[in-house]
Image (cartoon, rainbow, N blue to C red; front, side, top):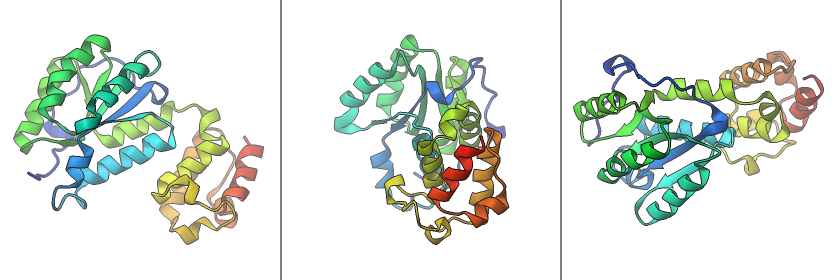
Length: 234
């Protein structure tokens, strides 16, 4: 049943002490296919947050594992493979009985588990808040999607953010497109890149050492031109 996403103030503060890092994270999406089939969910804040998290993970090449139905065993195997290099498991999606069963097992493997508290679905808002608070009492981290994506951005290595692939994926994230669909010679505004997205990208690149202005972006709004600017003025 759909319900309003709880606000940050409605949750007890997280008790976890570990620091989140994009280079150590795995985004675990639970029951996403089932959620997508629910009537009326497409335009909800929940689905918007899930899409933004997925796009951000793709932009930073954070591994994504899908836990759903017949793919559950394969997903668990993937988590096992990532355990040594990516010990931070970030959970979002549908909180199923299956997930509740496997979380204690996963916590015995890594204590760096986080749930995204505004990208979860339970039976009601009350159960949602109670479950997140219960997880927090057990030492599991929780934060909202905005805070998570901000920490991912801040912890991403500058050499990745300003690499050709990192630049292209960041643009694709803003456009909500597959990177392969973007023609490097086409003006990005023709794909729908607006001034807000441009400001966001300029801020990201400047924070990682690039010497680029909004005006320069506006005048050179193709991938090819941006690569020349960003990779010669680091």
